[in-house]
Image (tube, rainbow, N blue to C red):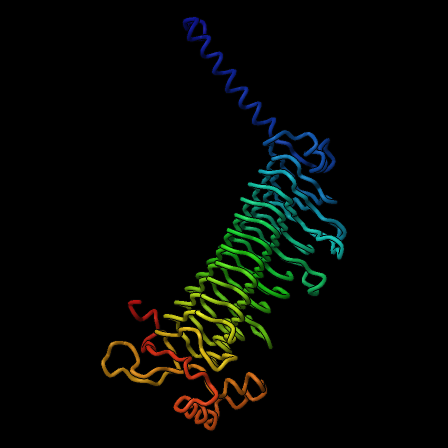
Length: 424
């Protein structure tokens, strides 16, 4: 057939065949297979021979790992059963190159160290890296990013060593980073599930952080961060946001962060934030606010918490609008006698007012701070009197003639129906 073609067409066909063959050979050359007992028995050996952009495939087996350094832009993919083991002594993997992808590997037993932060995967001073679909088990720190930017940490399952706070590190830990995406991860049994310090312009989405020794999310000295659609449950505190600015918190679920001093969301020295469309269910305190100002706390669900809101007197200019407060033991407590926050147009299940003009807004204000809440805050054991008739009479008298509760802390326009039943 080739002999019948004109020379020009024949030449073109030969060049095309050579080009296709060259591409195929080049693709095969980019795959470097790591297999125990082979000429390339370790990831370290694969990195030595790898070129920029190569694909390293790690086959099944347990590979002892002492800080494998990834200093080239490569993709490392684990096959089922590929396990990197730090043997309870070492950091497992250190990434120092931009544009590295690590996926589908299992990392175990990064050693506890009180001198350095040993991690299963540590990224130091890099950009455009992707850590996805890995399993991390019984490590000191799980995934640790330092001085890095424009990286993605997604769909990993991180289970820490969880013995005690001082001997456990963060599940996903960021220090001095910016423009990071933390998405779709499951984290448990770490000191803090997700920890940020000096981290800006970063998003935390679709993660589950539960059963951590300290906090589900811990964010400090950061700004312009957003976290949405996360679940924080069974932690000492769901989210702790401290010394930060311009943090947006939307559509998160805080559940069962329950204990003597456990909070769903703790805000300390936070300015200009948004807390919107979140669900707080059965936390000891749903939101605790201290020294936090100009926070928009709107359209949230506060359901069956011990305290819905604890707001200290040094928190000012905050708004609480269109929230549902349903069946909480106490709706609001404050440490001051003067209110500098706005609580209008919320739904309160404990409100017993009336709506004669049928506009959906109660005709008399609601005072959410009860006298008994002050007593319980000072003497927690008095909670056993919560449902007594005497206590209810005291609360009614205090609402009518407030002496101890802040007279200006009231909802002047309480909603008669819960917010999801209205057009707001």
